[in-house]
Image (cartoon, rainbow, N blue to C red; front, side, top):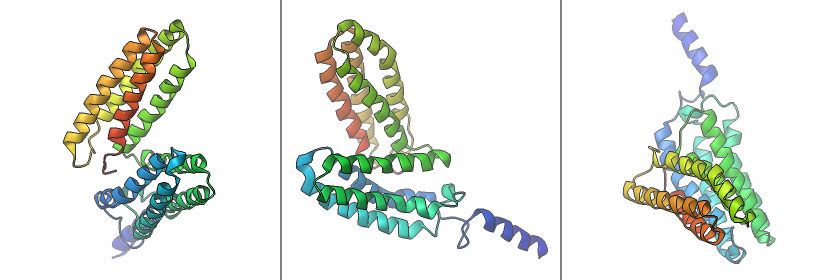
Amino acid sequence: MKKMTLVVLVLGLFFPLNGIASSYDDFKKDIIAPYSLYKKALALTSKVENKEKAIGVVKKYIDAWHQLAASYEQDVPQPFAWMSDFKIQINKPTAVGREALTLLEAGEVHAAHSALEEVRYQLWEMRVKSGISSLNDKVNDFHEAMEIVLDGIKEHNDAAGLKKFGKRYGAWLSIKWEEVGRAQDTGTDQEAFAKAVTEGRKAIADLREKMSAGDQAGAKKAGGTVKKAYKGVFFLNATS
């Protein structure tokens, strides 16, 4: 009996008192709806003319995330059981949503978008520190590389500069996209995922070709196609 009591006490130091830990598979399913609303809000706040639509979606996102947090703040999913501040972390996206809503209602659409971006990085950090390999985070990683490349294309007006830039960063962009393509947790729509990955691969190859030729106008156009392929994966309902 003494040994059993000791085991229970030790476990209590590492896991929530109301159970060993909830199922991460359940959490992955439950996060799909609020995270999908988050992604929609992020997209809408990228354009000022979407302000009213964005306000409605952000309100829905706040409610959905609040419900998710309420369900798990005392029933921590197993991979996050080590986090002493999980309750604080799982409620942060709700607070960010409220901040974004205030900014939207004040007409600060781009500021609202910037505020919402923080959720992407917060969840990314939680998963990485918990040893979780997620499609969403591979997509986030690609997004960072893509933004650097698209900004770089705008900055290099001369053909020689663009060629040099493309040689340095083109392969990096391809590698990051292939990491996305190798993700396992792609949700249920495997066909749509495979199609988006193929389209992205072709778009990146075209972009690299245009950069190698020093063709800034062509590279900008190809960059738009790459961004479209990225969105095709980003808006899929991945399960984590």
